Amino acid sequence: MGLLSFALVGGLVAAGWKVFSVVKAPPTEIASLNYRDREEIEINLGANELVVEVVNTQASITQGLSGRPAIGADGMLFILPAPQMTSFWMKQMQFDLDLVWIKDEKVVSITADVPQPAADSNQTQLPTYPSPGIVDMILELPAGKAAELGIVTGANLEFK
Image (cartoon, rainbow, N blue to C red):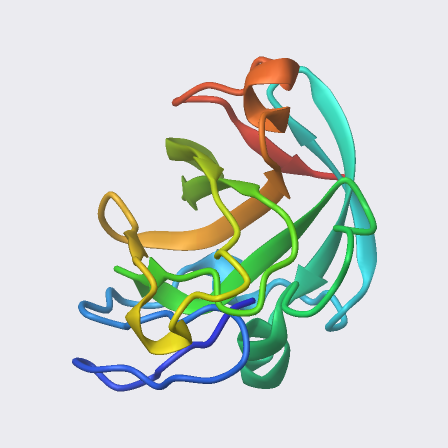
C-alpha cells in the first residue's frame, strides 16, 4: 500500500499507496535500521506492545497492504529510506486504516479512519493523505486502533 517515488518532486502510481517525495531531509539513523524487509518485529508505541511487519524496500513500500483482506500483524511499519514529506492513497485497499506519522521515533500526527475506496471508484482519482511534514516512518493500523490504544501525538516509538 505504499508506492515511494524517490524523485524530489512528483510521484509514481502503482498498486497500493502512492507516496510523493516532495521534500527530503538528510538521512537519519532510522534509514539504517537493519530489519529485513517483511520481517515482523516487536515495538513499543506509547504504553502499547505491538508486533508490526516492516516494509523498507521500494517494492514492498509500493505493495504495502494492497490487495490483502486483513492487516496481518498488529500493523505495518513503513521505514522510509530518508526523512521526507509524503502523501498516501488507498488504491486497491480492502479495509480502512489509521495512519500514524512518525519522525525521530515520535508520533507527530495521526490520520484516523482513512476509508477504503468504494468498489466502483476511479482508482486514478482517489484522495491523497499527506504527511503533516517531514516523516521517516508511517505505521498503518486498522481503523480506530490508534484511538483504542490511546496513541497520541508525542508518543514514543521504541524498537525492542
